[in-house]
Amino acid sequence: MSETMKSLKICAFCPNTCRSSFGANEALQIESQTPSALSLICLAVHQGNLEWNQETQDVLMRRDAVKSSVGKCTYSLNMTKILDDAVHSLNIR
Ligand code: SF4
Image (tube, rainbow, N blue to C red):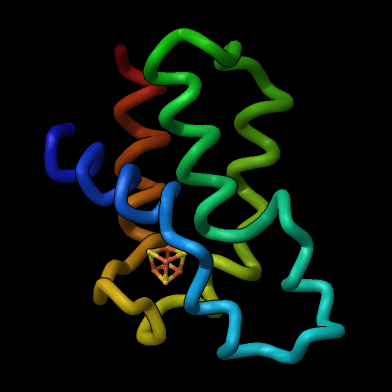
């Protein structure tokens, strides 16, 4: 999971520069659904600071903003794939 972790850390602390790819008033701007927010949630679970339960898993499936970021990420990350990998790793640990 080390490459995935590295990507999650980059995204979690990025100021969401991909947000400029969609309108300021669009629902995709919801803070808790940005790629950064979902990355931070994965890191919090990995570090034992957040429970890995159904609610957490449901939150990580709200991917509209993440899908929109693919191809527009400053770091060329595919956060859809990275979050899928992270969720898979958290499920099997
Ligand atoms: S997807 Fe890329 S640009 Fe968007 S918040 Fe994550 S690291 Fe930053």
